[in-house]
Amino acid sequence: MTTRLQAEASILEEVTRAADELVDFTIDLVKMPTVNPPGEGYRECAELIGGKLQAFGHQTAYITADASAEHSDAYPRVNVLGRREGSGGGPTVHFNGHFDVVPAGGGWTVDPFAGVVREGRLYGRGSADMKAGLACALFAVEAVRRAGVELAGSVEISGTVDEESGGFAGLAHLAEQGLVARGKTDHVIIPEPLDVDRVCLGHRGVYWFKVISEGRIGHGAMPFLGVNAIEQMGPVLEEIRRRLKPSLEQRRTAMPVVPDAARQSSININSILGGQAGQEPQTPCVADRCEAVFDRRFVVEESLEATRAEIADLLERVAAQDEARQYSLEELMVVRPTLTEEDDPLVLALARSIESVLGRQPELVASPGTYDHKHVARIAGIDSCVAYGPGALEQAHQPDEWCSIDDMVNATRVMALTLLDLAGETN
Ligand SMILES: [Zn+2]
Image (tube, rainbow, N blue to C red; front, side):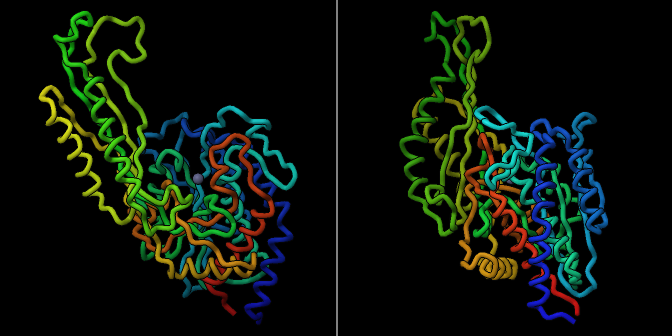
């Protein structure tokens, strides 16, 4: 029979012993250019993770979202799920990491898909966001096994696709299939790069919409005979800039959103398209259509209904000023804000582990953008979900993205102790 302290000590020792293996596996993951869009090499990457899960004693299944719009023979949406059964009576702890990455883009001084290690940092697209975090989850669970500690609860690890484009063929699909679900899954940890000493409780809401301005075509030499839809979009942009934006900036939230400038509501103009945009040659026409896409982020104190109504009212107000103005509103995407309770057992367990590994209290934060937590909350109906993982949020999607190897090892320690804490040892 081992004491809890002995179990913790041997688990931490196994993490230290596996540090090189952890880095090597992360390098292997970074070398797979799982670029999204279009979703390259998903099957190969899922198999790499699945192979490791199998070697680590998990029952492994591949779940392909073949009915999803993004799936094709050339770019299959393949997810992988591993599970190790506990001895019984404990909760199920699920680790989820997405293995898709955004395109490398320009400005790199190292090969983005070589997995270069230099001065304690692992460089590469997806190193921080979030292949290191996924690798850490695998090795955290494995350290518990190598230490010979038997858990009462079960543990699952999923590697999923498409997080960078909404996660619908990824974690959302697993939730829709009932593979991640309330009553079956008790706690979910998503090792997104939020820093080794921070626990992310949730994120703001998203209201993505398109405004369409309809005009009337006419000859460009006699513009007075038409109605220019681009010109009519002007007052909408002006109303947003002069009235809505300042009002949103006043709406600070109790959600601990980082960075501080994001701790409020916001709106961004994503795109604008009107007339014969991008077409060559141009013909002399009055633009009869203009579309603009907006990204409105709302906080937990605002309702989705009020957020929607505010935009509809704004358009109505602007339209009322001139009878030639005709606008319609199209909803593109809605994500409600989500926030896990600060005293949730998962948050408390992570906080204890962070304190024990790093010797300091964690900062509880919320993310400015959304990630797969939304699917865990809305589709799976699970309240106990956080993001915790190595790497800095500021590294995500940047050239020369990197993750600190020390942070990877520490995050693995924290996740392993958290698993022990939650899933419980059987003596
Ligand atoms: Zn991510």
